[in-house]
Length: 442
Ligand SMILES: Nc1ncnc2c1ncn2[C@@H]1O[C@H](COP(=O)(O)OP(=O)(O)OP(=O)(O)O)[C@@H](O)[C@H]1O
Ligand SMILES: [Mg+2]
Image (cartoon, rainbow, N blue to C red):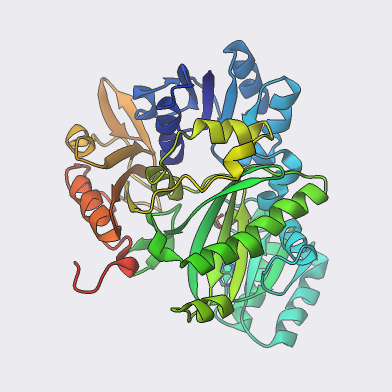
């Protein structure tokens, strides 16, 4: 088959590598792709969220399966448009993508279907700002304010005081901080604990749970500095016990997939649950009682989580993507998840100045040496070809992923490869996965 990957970051590079490896795939196309993807796929010009253009390209190129990376085209209804043109696509319909496209929808959905999430209220329009602030004052503690619509990962304020919560409400509802996306807001209770994400491949009715992962959003070591698109991630079975894994599947993933189907919005694609696990645990009884709260759903693969999840994949990804897209995971949903019992770590190399105004156009050296290291994958995020040389072309430039028997080994391999890469002024966190590393380690 011929597959088209939409998007041009490290997530799409990881997907393109996994797809290109499949014996079922004859050619991989990417739109727009990047310099790394260009080494294994034919990159086509255009924007991934230009629905009409993508549909025309998919038809012209006789694509058998479109794999959608980012959320914007999904929320814009690209899968519906492709279906109308007779092109199968991996990703949810516009109606199912509302789980990410509208936080108010997703919170109300969770409440209706008994998916654990913190208590909340929804407020709409500038006129509701006073009511929203009265709600916060009545609770008497700092809360979380979320813009309803897509805001490129910036539309959430986890306030430290009641005043800060009220200020965030005014910013969004009255000040228009996020434009249309912030015209409606969710005000919810704060939860504390350990954050992790969980991905599941869904065909509308059935699903294949993958693994838990944790990303690192802040730019500097020790979780300091501003938020970014993600500076690194790791995935390992040590992240959640077998009991917690099963609880996530039974309490979050299964009721969500069932609920969306019951609501007439069957979910095909990858469901990404952002979770908060309360403190405690350690033994089976404690894990059974540990608080578990769903912070959000995304309707696409995480970036950088994809790098670590696919690194641990011990199967051909394409039958899963194709089965999910066609609503026919069948026996794949009954079999054990295709994830090895090892670990993977991904470290992002960002451009000087990231996440503010990143410097672009810098030459990148050492790529071949890094990529040749065993168990390592060098994924391109923001790169371009200039006069035959690879240069930086985005905030996050590369994502170096490594697999190992455990987090320690994966970490050592990832950083050894990172140290081969030469990029002037690169911003790199040195503590990815540190929370999971054994005492007496490094
Ligand atoms: N109820 C909550 N209590 C405490 N922290 C929260 C809560 N909700 C969200 N957060 C924090 O804010 C971050 C962003 O929230 P959320 O995941 O809902 O937003 P997002 O912008 O959709 O993120 P992403 O870009 O990961 O999709 C979370 O990763 C978490 O750290
Ligand atoms: Mg989100």
